[in-house]
Length: 90
Image (cartoon, rainbow, N blue to C red):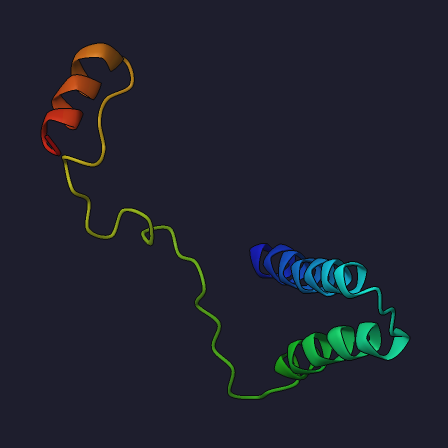
């Protein structure tokens, strides 16, 4: 499900940048909007029809695959833990 939200965000981001430049240049092209949507949708829809597609975008251990103690600190005792964490960088 995350991949669909990511795709929607990416599509709307491209659309927003297009509209921003259209406003900046005072040019409004209907064809450009269609091009943005089609150039994003066709590969995404085509991905669903591949036979050999193996999708491993996110797993449970992606974020903490190589945990580093200096980057993860205990929030329950935030004042001392944060100070200890910050001391690694200073």
